[in-house]
Amino acid sequence: MRYRCYICSSTFEVTTEHYRCDCGGLFVLEIENSVLEVDRSDWSLWRYRSLIPVITDSSSTPTISMGEGMTPLVADSDGSFLKLDFLNPTLSYKDRGSVVLVALAKALGVKEVAIDSSGNAGVSVAAYARRASIGAHVFVPESTSPKKVRQLQLFNAEVHKGGDRSFAALAIAEFLDGRPEIFYASHVYNPFFAHGVKTVLFEIFEQLQMRLPTEIVVPVGNGTLVLGIHEAINDLKRASLIQTGPKIMAVQAQACAPIYEAFRQVPSSSYSSPTETIAEGIAITSPPRVNEIISAISESNGDVIAVSENEILDAQRGLLQRGVDVEPTAAATYAGYLALRKSGCIEDACVVVLTGAGLKSR
Ligand SMILES: *Cc1c(COP(=O)(O)O)cnc(C)c1O
Ligand SMILES: [Zn+2]
Image (tube, rainbow, N blue to C red; front, side, top):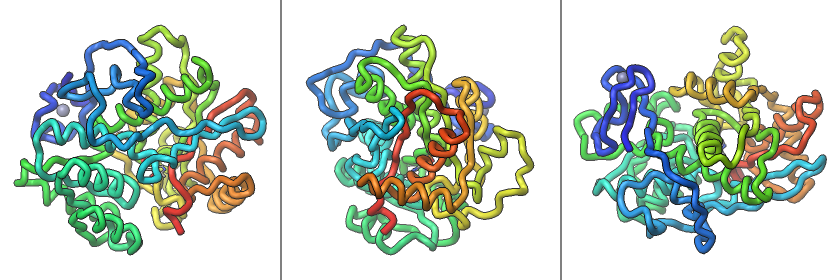
């Protein structure tokens, strides 16, 4: 197992103190071929641990696990399904990646981790770091809600607050510079994260009796969910369990849609500032892995669509009418699903992944 630079293909040991290549390229993870063996005695995403990268003992579930994964798949109308992935320990799908990332940090023997995030990733990493007795520095924008800051503090994280989201990214880069002993537990930069997230597709495969939907609808901001699903499709193909994967239908908010614009090749002037959408989890103006995200979506024959603020609010109300309470970012995904269904782009059963709980935003 090693890191390879996505741009220049240089390789690095996973024990490296670098979080990206000297050329500026981001790391992808190269893993030796392994087989998918489901451990049915384990009721968490670690039942797929034969395909989850860990650098120490891979024969047992890490002690920091809080039973993440194994979220419900419930029937929606029109034969489609909702994957209630906000039912994870810290109420977002991010726990799938954080547990793997913090397991790595623990195996590397680091004492402190740092992460920049506007919300769910920070809370999730802080929770697992606390559980692993690792210190956490979380860099958040000034606008972060007091409730989230309080939750970070309850997990004993040191909160560094100031500026906007891109300022937080700059501030953490400066903080990490000259502190090689601090592990950058970034859901965006560190490719282990997506290898935890990918388990969502293994679960859907099991829940649908060893089948996959024709389409899977997911939100996209920094793309860890898109890239995780892409990895999972490759794993299932390699295991000869499927011939083709689902089309990845990725959803952005019109107010901040760089991936939509790059994929559809429309001019980028139409989006302005991330603060203009209530879907804060996908309000990412320049996602570092944009090229990887676009090739993952194309390879799956998928598409990217963008939804308006009104569509997001309508979708949130629509889900509430079914007893499902999600945050606006997750409602955006459902809005994307409704738009695709209306335009006839989705005819068969599909799965909509709902990523964050409503309580997060109240
Ligand atoms: C982080 C997040 C997303 C976006 O995931 P990316 O990996 O950035 O594409 C979507 N929904 C919720 C609730 C999130 O927390
Ligand atoms: Zn490089």
